[in-house]
Length: 344
Image (cartoon, rainbow, N blue to C red; front, side, top):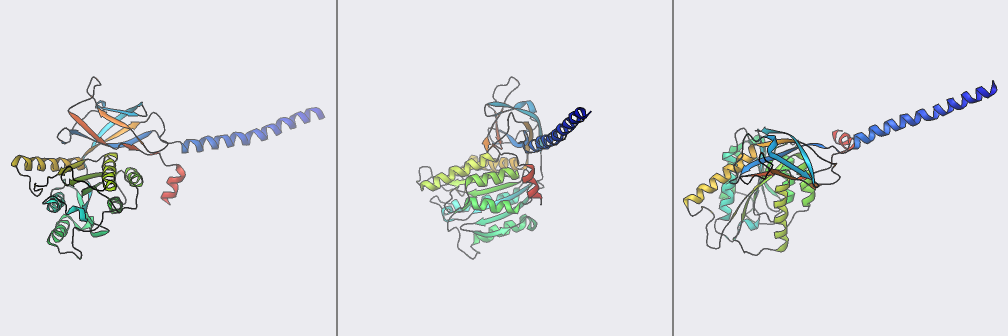
């Protein structure tokens, strides 16, 4: 009897030791599941003609994705038509005076144009900047106030003479992000600039992660001096980084350059004026609409990485008549712990 009691005691002790292990393992598996980076994502993409005009009614089967040389499943493609919020960044630094006649005037016209002809149901805010923010108009003021403020800058009715000063372009992109808080996927920051940056403290990587995580697209109206004009290597590098940033967020760039003898204020020929008008209208349409793609990734995203998206026909061949602008950077999913901290 004593031997049997000892046997039962041993069995009981074993179970009392095993049960906590089972509970602990269950909690561990649950925690691991919560911390596993998500594979299903929603990304934004604009399908465009070669002329930059948005394409409507694109079937899901026309999208083909790839991540780390593995296929990405495109589950659905839903067209999103807005409304939109657009923050206009007007670069008023010294380089905007330019070596090309009419550069500053064209920049002011571009800012006025988007305020006057933004997509229907859109709200527009404005930041005028050089070394620091010089003028700011938030969304509550309305487009009329934005136009009035640009007119004041044109007339020189500002405390400082503009254009002048250095260019913290990346820092100002983050200032634009503040006007959009809390951000809504599809919000737009529209930078009218020459893309140079010689004063930012923020890194391109940090700005890219901030925009992509918030679902904000960066567009640019890029006005540069005539081709071949030499600029400082650091500014050339900054321009390249800025254009990469536009691409990473799913935006596009409308670029113009002059010559030592050209006048950028008005294109010389009627067909060129019409082409510029069509290009800006196409840019505004891109801001207004995009496709929300639901995708399944083949593996977790462990660090910020680029993925590939292209348009294909019914035979799976790449389409030459369409192009796609999309969120090219994927970020790791935030853990449950990180999300909880943000919500507090």
